[in-house]
Amino acid sequence: METLIILSYIALCVIVFKVCKLPVNKWSVTTASVIGLFIVGWIFLYMAMYQPVSRMARLYSVTTPITSQVEGLVNDVYVKGNEQLKAGDPLYQIDPTPFQDEVNRIQSDLKRTQSAIDYFQAELARYQKLGSKGFSLKRKWTKLKPTC
Image (cartoon, rainbow, N blue to C red):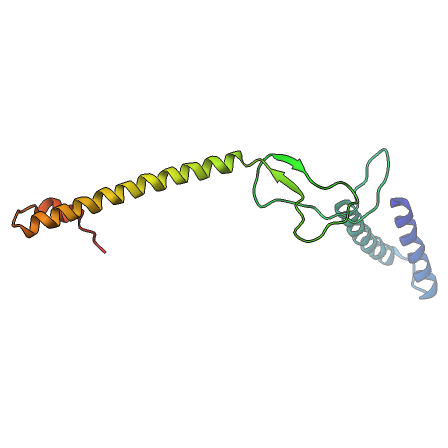
């Protein structure tokens, strides 16, 4: 395939030089070579990205890389090669264990924070009640009173 592309470009250059009657000197040949290198290089890069090749067999097809937004181990793959897909079809399942651990940790933090809020609200109500009866607990009162 690569040889065919390079030979096609050389044939195109020969035809252009003959038809347009361009002089064959070091500048015109160098320019045609540099332009050819860029064009053929771009074609090879495109082929490497979108048309995978192996040493045993060649497969020329446009491929679309699939990536996930999260990292993790793949538990199950739901699709097979050359299978028609629709938007929204699940492709694979990622192991939920690390994510569930994080959810459990956050729920634990939430429960701990909620119990602290309940405690401080009860303390605030208690100190407000004592303050209304005339007890002076200024230091504790200012410690519990929210500053917004």
